[in-house]
Length: 241
Image (tube, rainbow, N blue to C red; front, top):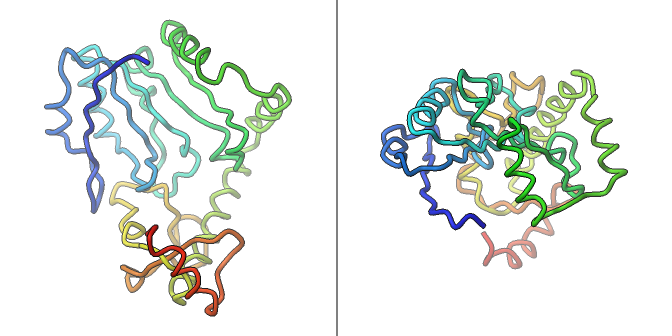
């Protein structure tokens, strides 16, 4: 819509840290905005305060806006989520995006929101008029009710995710999944992760072990596939994974 020229700065394994020098070389006085996603999908990377401060200083120095996708902010397990808008001098140049879908498992509702000062929300509303325009009124009332959930809801949410990872880990160890799990290892970083890990999420279930690397997995809705089904799944997914 804006006919903008995109410059991508890649987060690379094993720790997916922000390549500061590469980022600095990509930002100039011609840069209009920076888009970031923290906690990051799919790596689980959470931007550290130091990384966010570098981005903030570049934005202030070059008069750049920030659009930050923080839809996984309630699924932080190893460190507290830091919102870009909370840094000094950044609220007035940041559009914070969030969603009902991830935190409340209601992705089909397609309800989200943007938080920004009035001079930025004006532009958001203009773009929105040509995209979604509106959503179901009853669902908006339900969303408002969901956002009043107590802190105990978010604590239980993280415990549930920890248990589910344990189930998944045991399924992989049993060799009953197909796919590529190389990307599953190393999702956590020394500075934090939004991926549940044993001992940090309240789960007593084991995490995926190193012996799972390189196996082929295929997540099927409804649970772990029995051994006798795996050959058929492999045949149907060989061209997909």
